[in-house]
Amino acid sequence: MFAGLVYALCAVTALSCAILLLRGFSRSGARLLLWGGLCFAALTVNNVLVFVDLILVLEVNLFTWRNAAAVAGMGVLVWGLIWDAH
Amino acid sequence: MVLSTIPLARLNGPEDPRTRAPSTAASSSIPVISPLASQPVSEEVARLLSTSIDTVAELEILLFLHRRPDGEWDPNAAADLLYLDRGLSQKIFRKLHTKGFLTFRDDPYLLYRYAPPKDVIATIDKLAGLYTERRLMVIAMVAARRPSSVQLFSNAFKLRRGGR
Image (cartoon, rainbow over all chains, first blue to last red; front, side, top):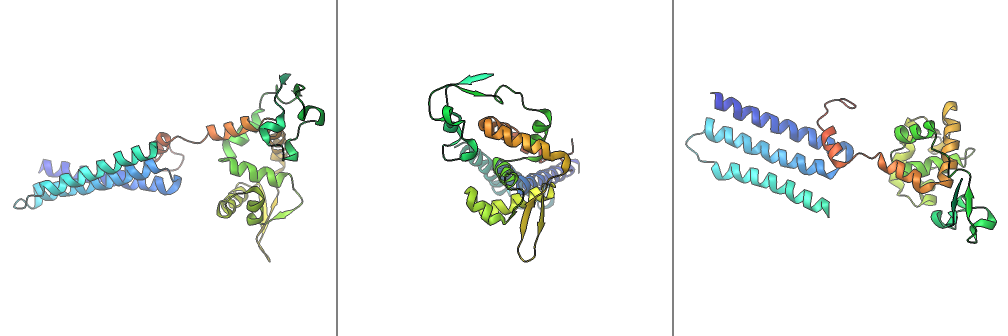
């Protein structure tokens, strides 16, 4: 029960960050905010999948998919930072 | 007073008549004595730059209109003369109008006219003089106030604009 609450709050937090960063990107056009927003969007997916995997649907293993979402998000952020630096 | 052996015209472009230094000094290596070069930037000019001018393009358009206070200008025509993107020019004209520097009429065409508030006219005059004399410094002042990416990242988490 408590773990489920933590997973849900993580998802909500990541979603809030994604929304705020993408809103900031739409206002300022700074690409750092785009990469950060996309990263947090992927982390939102990751956290939702964690909630689904560990709380809602125990019979299906989503380990690969949820970690793939997290890796994709971090990859977008790292790629964006490197690309912007150039 | 500051002495410089670099003609001002070399810094600002020899083709621009506004920036041409006094005739005897501009074309030789005789030291240029600029009366403005030793003057600090006045507080009101610094405030104008920090509160109302976000980019060099905005500054260029504002001073372009300042030099032509009696004319009415189409943003596209100004863009062509200043070698700016037309879309950017239209945005800047709208922004300058929002900030109260310009008025406009849209019949039959959208035309803007330089019409700043009375209490800002003298400040813009000073800014124009400063830009002629110390262009690079003014550009540096405008560029320095652009927020860094990290600052923008931080600002993105402010729920309200201007919130702390």
